[in-house]
Every structure is written in C-alpha cells, then in structure tokens.
Amino acid sequence: MATPVANERLQKRFEKWDSDGNGILEWRDFEQEAAKITQNFGSEADSAEGRTLKEAFRSLFDHLTQAAGAPSNGPLTKDQFLSVTQNLIFEGGEADFNRALGPVVKGIIGLCDKNADGQINAGEFEAWLAGIGVDRSAAQEAFRKVDTDNNGELSLDELLAAVRKYHFGQLDVELLG
Image (cartoon, rainbow, N blue to C red; front, side, top):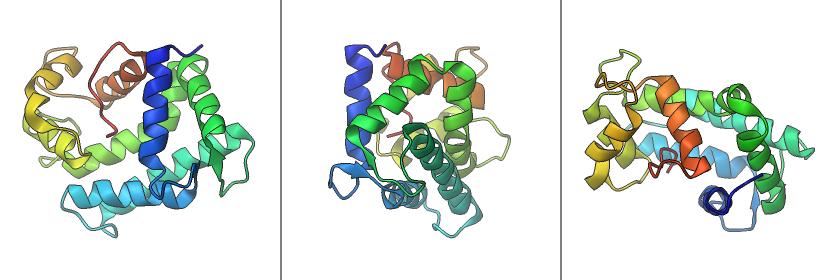
C-alpha cells in the first residue's frame, strides 16, 4: 500500500511525464522525456546513448501499459499509472522494480559515465542531476546518501535502490527528474 509521500511522488512523476499536459500518458510522452534527458546531457537523440535511453523508456512504457491492461500504445490514465506504479514499488518487490526501471537507469548511466567504467563518480553524478533537471547545488550531499558502500562510485544497484527508496519516502534524492 502506498504511503502519502509515495503517492505524492508518483503523482508528480505522472505530471512530469505527461509532457503535453493532456492528463494521460502516451508513448510520445515517454519518447519526449528520453529525448529531453539525452539533450540535457549534450547528446543527440539519434546517438547510440540516446537510442538506448529511448528503447529503455519504450520498455518501461510497454511494461506499464501491459500491467494496466491498456493497449500497447496506451494511453495510460493517471489512475492506471498510479495503480500500476504503486503495485510495482510496493507489491512487486525489488526484482520486478529493477526489471522495469533498470534499463532507464542504465540508459542514464550510459549518458553520463564519461570514463565508461560502468560506475558514476561524484562529477558524473552532478552532471546526472543537471541532465534530469534537478538542482546541482545539493549534488555532493545527495551523492553521499546514494553511495551506500562508501567507495566513491555509484553502481547500477545503488542507483536503483536510491530510486526505490525515493519512492518509499526513505530518501529525498530524485534521480529520474
């Protein structure tokens, strides 16, 4: 069952992804989000990294529409989105959550991992926050909160755990913008 904080954050996510403000989520909304993030990282939408992120958002959109029983090209109503994402976060468990959101997080890693080591260092994390439109001013503190093994690098697992904790209301570091 979703907490008030989780419900508020999921509603905010819906509104952010509903790029045209028409009250439903369509594939075009997800496609625009991928393109915006890619552009914010200084890459072109048709670059390898941009295509990877777009495919990851497509996979997420397909997962959400299928779970909602909606047509494969949507749309998803706000109620459907909230129901499906609440189930994904609170009922589906970590493996389901990671399967759905892992490709998106991995796609963002591909955009900001400038040294191509598969990890995100503090500088890359600051670029991540800027790339998704989050204020960079608190990047250092946010990095420390997400770096749970204190090795100075963020792994895919740490980043996915942080996204999940954010939606549980256990962490105030927003990694998906």
